[in-house]
Image (cartoon, rainbow, N blue to C red; front, side, top):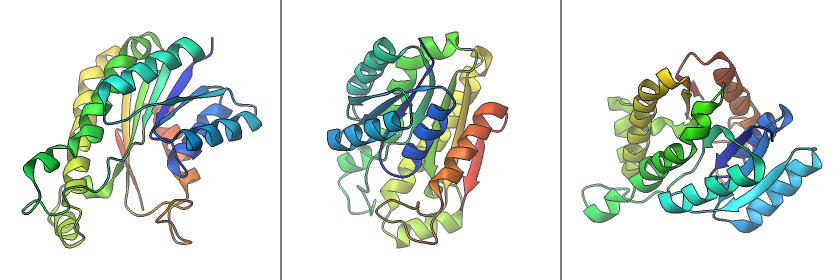
Amino acid sequence: MSKTIVVVGFGPGISSAVAEKFGAAGFSVALVARNQDRLASGVSALQTRGITASAFPADAGNPASIREAIAKARTQLGPVAVLHWNAFGGAEAGDLITTDPATAGRVFDVAVVGLLGAVQEALPDLRDSAEGAVLVTNGAFGDLSEQVDDYAVRMGSMGVALANAAKHKLVGLLAQRLKDDGIYVGEIMIAGTIKGTTWGNEHSIDPVAVADTFWKLYQARGELYACLS
C-alpha cells in the first residue's frame, strides 16, 4: 500500500492545497474533519485529479476520536508517513480577564491535546517511515512578542493567542523529542488571512504558496519554522 498523509482540520484553503500537493506527489490522502459534507466534497475533488482519497469524520479536540480516525485511515489507505495538523479550535476566551477559566482551558483541546493524540497514534508508522513528518499550521498570534500580545488583546483574540503559543511550543518539543527517530516536525505560522476562506480577500495569502512551503520544509527536513504574510 502507498504512503498516506493524514490531513486533520480539512477545509478550503491551506489543508485543501496541502492535500492536493502531497496527493499529486503520490500520497494517498486521508481527510479528517467534523463536517461530513465538506469531507465528501474534498474527496471527490481529489479523486477527480486521480488522487486516492478517503474521508474520516472526527473531532480534532477529542483525542480518542482523532486516534480512531487515524487508525481507520491506516487500515484503509496504508501507513501514515505524514500528519498535517490544520485544525482550528475556535475563538473562545477572547478576554482572559472576564472569561470562565474552564473556557480558557478548552482552548488547548485542539491546539495541544488533539494534536498530541494524533501524533501518538501515528507514531509507529512515522517511525517506520524513512520520511515520517508532522507538519503543523499555526497562526502568528502564537509569536512571543509584545507587539503580537498587544494586537491579540485589542482584537479580542487572547484565547487564540494562548492556543497558538502553546501549539508553537509543542512543535518545538516534539521536534527535539522525535529527531532521533528520524521524524521531521515543522510549522508554518500564518501572519494574515488565506484566500478562499471565510476571511480571505484579494490581498490574502495564496494557500498554494503555503502548501509549496510545507513541501519544501518536508523535503529539506531542516528548518523547523517558516512564516508567511
